[in-house]
Image 1: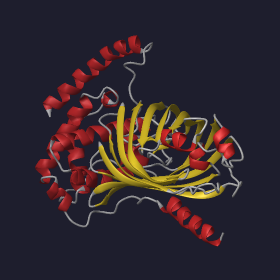
Image 2: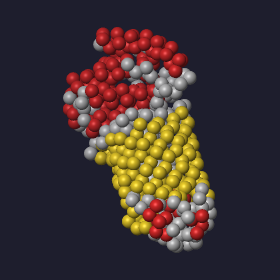
Image 3: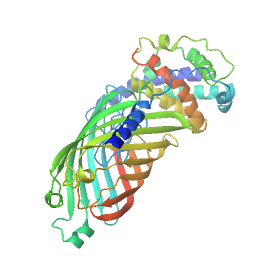
Image 4: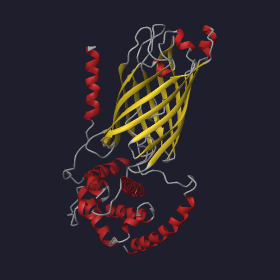
Length: 146
Length: 298
């Protein structure tokens, strides 16, 4: 009985210990920025992402009134900052940008899929893709159902 | 930049056209979109019909429905050890990434044992009706892991043999609490899925040999777990462990484990293969063999 209790407690620890990381602090170095091929590589991913979105009937309508040139510039800055590159993000906060769009979980995931497709097209290794996704994932709470 | 803007305008027009086609599709499910969750986040289907690994139910819900969407799957699984062959198939529906309903049928063929022991039946069968409720959390994003509470009502449908070896009842309910989390880039940059499940059950060999027994008739808490590494969005490798009760004195019941590889070519299809170590089953020891599973989902 005692052994059972102890084992149960350890599983409970596993169950509830699976707590993810909260919002990411700034990267310690520019290794992700370098792994993505610097600003040129990041710009190619952003351009690829925009083409993916343009082709994505699930979410393209959300961009109907978007200034695409500005979006492209801000995404380049943002990805650069999140990758630890030498940039400053000059755009508005994620919460402000997405306010009123009523974006759903499914919308958010559709964009994630488009981003993965863009990174695959640039032949970025999976572990590099995962690092960028890990940086961007905490923004979800500021983006959906706003 | 010009090109990207032009593309967007063209896409907006195309969207309008597609809406028209979409209306035509409403009647048929053939061109229904798959759900809005990410690839592989519905896992595969466990042998009892619940979304999870092969032998362990996870906290994830079947199919790909996100909040406000439906999802679901149909599956078929075969495990062959030479002495025994388990066939399981079933289907499930999930709504709102919140609740999952499932139904599954299992058939365990035991030709070797039937011949050796002169048993009256060649197989053991049961039906399983499952419900799973996501309590809180998210597999990938929330601060908390995804945690779900589940129940599996099981009905053994040819109870003669189980009753002869000491099983006490032909139907019962398993309850389980599962926690699942995908850690992005956790192991050498690869995503890691960790699942822990606590099951409260008295099912003998998942229920195929009935419920409760001469040695013990009350439920016990059983620990189950899975760890999976996502090599990329489509390929997964992992291990599973499932503790089992030991209620019948005529034979030992072993814990189960397996190593698996899962392939998710699309949100429609998933394939899983595993090597399963099942130990002693109804007096036959060292049962091990290949586990193959196919799942269609949306």
